[in-house]
Image 1 (cartoon, rainbow, N blue to C red):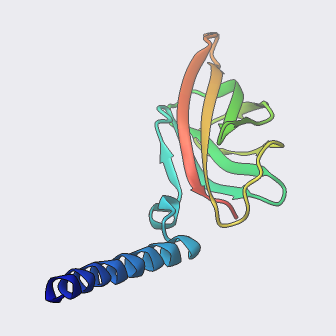
Image 2 (tube, helix red, strand yellow):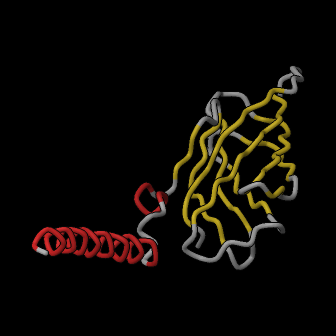
Length: 149
């Protein structure tokens, strides 16, 4: 009889511990603390010769906006920007005369359906030509991630 009671107490102790862990993990998830973007903020990576700043993704209008500056002394005569946000394609944008002072870019993403406060990841492809008689189809790739406003 004593062995059975010890075994039952052992199982009950571990059972309560497991239930407490499940409740704590559920509470952290419900509060949104398990989303990595909450801890890292906006991340901008891999844009090569471009500088990206002042990033904002408005979930209401589904618009990704940022400033784009070319870090070399030449001016980008024209650039075509293709963006994919969380697997959904956005509208293609063409901009002209991008220099070191920066240009404001707004890209509409009609397929984006995440609520405010959720995380997003935008993969950006820039195909551009430089002024001065040289015409190349240069390509730059980058990634922007952050929290939907």
